[in-house]
Length: 381
Ligand code: G3I
Image (cartoon, rainbow, N blue to C red; front, side):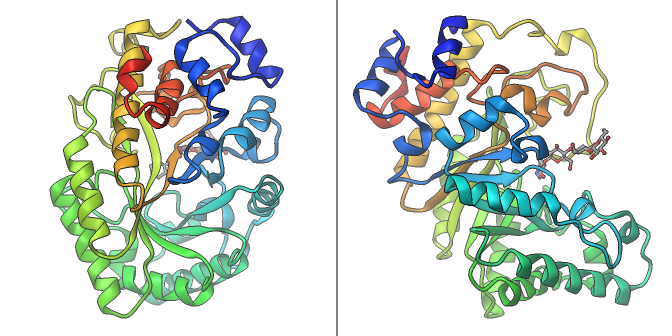
């Protein structure tokens, strides 16, 4: 369906001058990109790797400024990288990202201040609560204040919940107690008064986990501390997008007076070895076998269409709630970059995003545009 011809067009800047009805519609309406198409609705973001931030990836260097007006560093602002030892910080790549975003008028979401994963080695072995507390205060204050006014929002706390809505037994919970999330937001508020502050997690559209997130948000608000939004990550499977739960979540979170963002959107198309449970718990992996890696050469048209329909359904919903949704960010620019090639099984070939491995737009891309131009993606195919 998409061939070398369309890739050549992409490279020469005539991305949408091709022959399908959907593409014609996009061109006729002068809608040349995701960011333009949804500019009155919500920001459209992507996660960027270190290479992409440094513009060493020529495909991304062309595509990102054209398509996206928001971005999140996929890894380079995580504590393990930005704060490698007690009193040493490594701001090089984060500073480059800020400069890159400024050049291209992209709003940055800094990711993430407090997370149980990818913590610095010196923190992992820490035994006493005072040391953890000092790390916690220093880390949030130093990193958040450096980027205040330079980034649009912070994922202040990431993935603090278990699936049943209770608090995850992280080093922060163990050493600092139940109030650590409120304290993280209090410190972030002080260090970053000009930056939106978000709580971010996966599966929080699910009722029990959602209730846990609501309890966290209410507790922060009751303490008189600022929280501006909640990030629903959106790591789902194409066969199992929980539309009703997502809609209910948008309503319930919005009722708390905060914004909703979809912060890490991707839809896996591969068999899930753990059944149909959506999860982004990176400790939960499985072993490889050929049956669970069926599309090593290319994605069959039928699955392309299924992906397109699923994405269109999501964007129709997002448009319905556009007044409550601040941003929709995809977790990666193209399929080749996606973490889902390595999770929950290493070495697979997945296709969860809107652009293929050569940065060509997929049918899902046009279906997403189509939600805006015609109000229904079904007509696109
Ligand atoms: O940096 C090391 C490098 O030095 C080493 O040579 C290489 C060898 O494997 O590993 C590199 O680290 C990898 C890192 O990505 C940077 O590429 C880690 O192994 C790998 O586990 C890590 O994966 C990231 C994952 O978070 C782990 O935390 C993914 O790229 C990233 O997409 C993923 O993103 C998370 C969000 O932050 C939070 N929500 C869930 C989402 C998906 O897991």
